[in-house]
Image: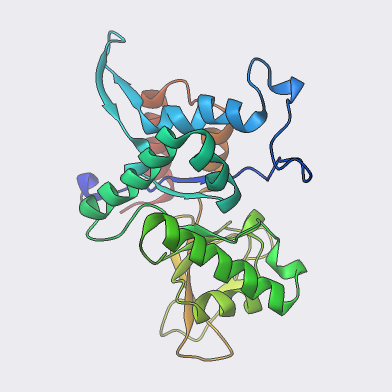
Length: 259
C-alpha cells in the first residue's frame, strides 16, 4: 500500500455522569472546578468547545484555519452529557450535531458519531433486561439527536461478553471498539487454526475483527481494535503540539505495519 494511502482513525470518547442534585434537578456549585460553576461547565469550556473550533497554526504560531475536529474524527458523547450540554452549552451542542452531518458528506455517507450505552453501565455486570434497555435507550437518544441510526456503539470501559455483542447485533449495531488484549484467540477468515493471543500477546492494533455469534451464525459483530500506546499518549501527553503528535504516530505506524 502506498504511503499516502494509509489512514489513522482517532476516536474520542466523551462522557460525564449526571451531576444534578436529585431533589433540585440542577448541578450545585462544585468548588473544585473553580473558576467555573461545576465540572461539566469547566470540561466543556476546556475540552468540548475548543474541539469544535480548533485553531490550526502555521510555523510562526499564527492561526491559519479553524476546524471542527468532530467532523474529522470518530466520536461518541454520553446521553447524560449531551442532555446537560443541550441546555447549558447549546453552541457546542449544535456544533457537534453539525459536525456529524458534515462528516457524512466527507466519509461516503458514514457519520463520525457513534452511540453509547445510555447510562455508561458496565454491561457484563447487568442482567439481560437491563443490558438491552441500555442499548435501546442509547440508540433512541442517538436517533433523536443526530437524526439517523447509529452504526457503532461505545461500551462502558470497553467491557464486553458474548451476550452483550448479541444484543448489539440484534439491534443492528455493526461495530464496537475494544482494547487489543480483550480477545482469547483469533484466526483469519477461512482458516481453521486459532492463534492464542491472551498470554503476553494481543490482537494487532490495525486489524478489524469479526466475531460470529453463537446464537445465530449469520449474525456477527465487528470489533475495531484501539492502538493502546497512541491512545494513552493522546489522553495524557503531547496534546499541546499536534505536529509532534502526528509525527510520533507516523513513526509508530511504520513500526507496527510494513504495508
